[in-house]
Image (cartoon, rainbow, N blue to C red; front, side, top):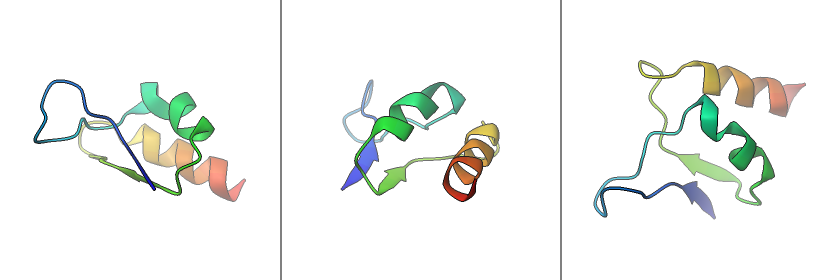
Length: 53
């Protein structure tokens, strides 16, 4: 399963950011989309730290 956030557009998922980390870390999904490092690279750092310790 993929964790995807659909809000304003039914055609394109929202870009996940640092404010979504708590929801992501509690999700049973093994995958998530969509990330954009140019908009919020800190979320990727948090996920890496969470997964690798």
